[in-house]
Image (cartoon, rainbow, N blue to C red; front, side, top):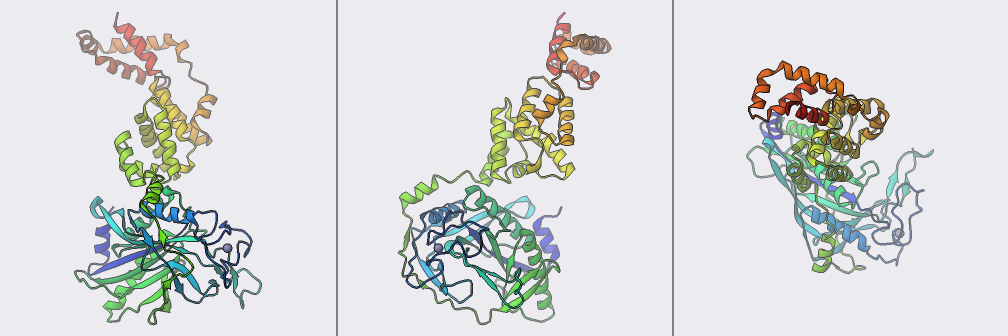
Length: 493
Ligand SMILES: [Zn+2]
């Protein structure tokens, strides 16, 4: 596979794309940011509302402490500097889903700044993508343009979402390819999920992304005119939309045209972006400090308290797991896609007699079968606990590697966990039939006089050779522990 940079330069030898991303993440607080209405998704329209989030005259906002803690935690996980004082500001604009006529956001004094995310880049290296700022704001309501009998002439409004706490995460224009944008978003989501401040559910709109993109001749410092791609609901579509948009912009420039600064929408069915509104008359939001809220102060003591709930983050966890369990980067990546999965793996590995064997089994036996079946690890019939149980059985010599493979195959056939299949198949009763094994051992020893001589001459490692030969003769069905015992006796004669 070509590296990211190779594909990018090969795709556009003369032009360099410049991409910046704005991500909105809904915070998982129980109540809204400035009132006590519930944030629950999927309830009947306009039921989670009150005078504050409806923007009634005279209603006063009260800041949700949990929202501040969640936002601060996320910003810390994104390596940001937390500003001790930040200011809420009114962003004035009219839209039907914004009953107040302004959104309470943060403007020139955001909660956090100067962060970064490490993303994979050219030649297997990684690259820092800067995060300009993380600020707190309230979500707007939702306009419903379809689904009603009179939808062809009317738009319905649901204000349940109005006032749900959001963080906006703005990246620096450090991203050079659609693939990097995809990686950035994947890492960002993973980090946020690890902190537990959002479910990042894109279908329900808890994570939304807008992309700014421009192109410039390679080597030129000055940025080209950018367009903004809005309302794309999957990371894959963002990558595709950027791919298309970069190609379109280069086409326009190469044919002597100029890029118009505008907002564009992506049509996933056609794989194209379309101009939505020109930004020539850019909005003037007339920001000013929100007079009904005090400056937000997150002092050192509070910061320290929030920092205590910062979990080990995916990047650090992967590095530690590679070291601790001797697994590959790739497997560490797969095992850490979800925090719960990584937790299960580590719990199982630590409970097992030999953690590294658990990791090995995951890597060699589990991943291979999952891949062959095109299954995600979350859907594996064998749980991490099952892998640990099987590892212990091999470790104790109760089952051989061959038996383990057969049992794993059965697990996948039956869609059942290891322990269940192991019980169903009946625990192996090898100890009752040692006579057959002794016969095999006699044959193996007789067939290898040279090795026997070496063993008798003091080369005790030859024992391993004989164990291997007997295991082979038994087609892997014998218990290595018992073979070891019997061979020891036989050779010790
Ligand atoms: Zn409310």
